[in-house]
Image 1 (cartoon, rainbow, N blue to C red):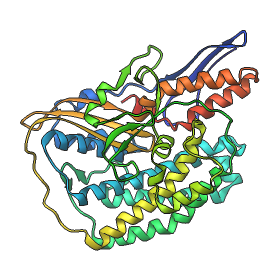
Image 2: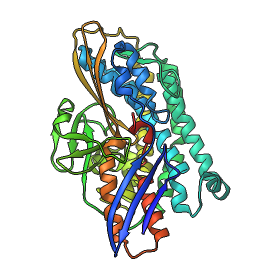
Image 3: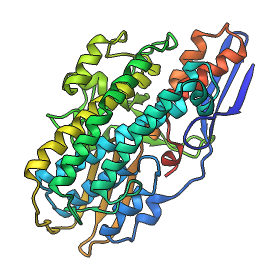
Image 4: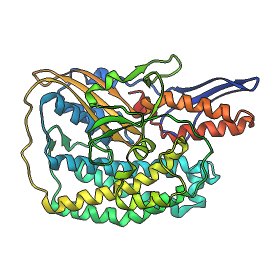
Amino acid sequence: MIYDEFVTQIEGHGRIYFDIKDGKVVEARLEIHEGSRLFESFLRGRRADEVPQMSSRICGVCPVPHNMAAIQALENAMGIEASEQTKMLRRFMISSQMVQDHALHLYVLAAADYLGVTGISEVYAKFPDAVKRCVRIRTVGNRGIELVGGRAVHPINSIPGGFAKLPTREDMEKIAKDFKAILNDCIETFRLFASLKCPDFERPTEYLAIDDGKHFPAYAGRLVTNRGLKVEAKEYRNHIKEVFKPYSNTKFCVMNGHGFHVGAIARVNLFKNRLNPTAKELLRESPVKFPSDNPFHNNLAQALEIVHYAEEAIKIAEELAVKLKDEERPKPTKAGTGVGVVEAPRGTLIHEYTVDKNGIVKDANLIIPTGMNTTNIEEDLYALLSANINKPKEQLKRLAEMLFRAYDPCLSCATH
């Protein structure tokens, strides 16, 4: 039995290949055919102040994390210390991105797998209120990004040292009300996905996210895992290795020789105690208990994060509505190499840049969440197929595609 077809309802172009002979899985692999986009090459030689906007073009779905990771890396390279207010605004932008991006994945890409339909048009035909809920959530999330970043896609206002233009206190007060208005939609999203039955599958793995010692993962921090890793972000090369495989246009990542998992399920597994109050209460009510080793539960973790990050956006916006003030942006003090780490919707994102004394980027290295997950997807795929080996080919195909989608892969990012 050979399955070799492209997978739909994902961001980008890829396919799953598996070969089963005599009741055993001979091979299972993930092939990403999105064209190579060579960002690391053409970021070299650019002025440092150009790079955040350019790197955000890696993705039109989640540009904010690329923008934030690039800025953070450049600031670390050039000795710029951002203010606490600036960091709050950056966490607000990431929260807004998480809310709108998770809604896109859950309703438009993943929901059909569980609702007995074939795509978003059928989801709308049978469940119009759910799709309208998605639109409301995404509208406010995009509004939050635009307010601080200058526009909803590929922000232009966030720059090394701070922001070219700050929102007003009145702006922050209004956006807080907007997020409050969709909080019930976010809660209903969690309840919907908590009610859906996931495939029964578990495979223990290593989960990685960032930890700033205080917040649920969002902006900056050390790299930590459930198996005891706790290192500074700048040490990532000592632990995360990128390798090429001849059948795919993206790099595959391994840590200590094996795959690992980043994303919503990793964040919730590691830091569920830091969730905001409503999200924490929903987790107590959930039929699924975290930490979970079922990769299909990444969908439910995303639904939970929609609630958490909406609450986070409200909290930050209300605080800044009272104390937001104009600030002078700090200037570069040195040349050097810097690493930036943030959480993107699909998991931990790493940018590294070397900047010379003239402010020119001499080297760039980017590790994308989907690239980090690729090895783990293959390992999960092999285990899932092996556990269901006696099922008909169509059921195996469906399970394999559902698994791939549950990781919420962004294949355009992966072939950066």
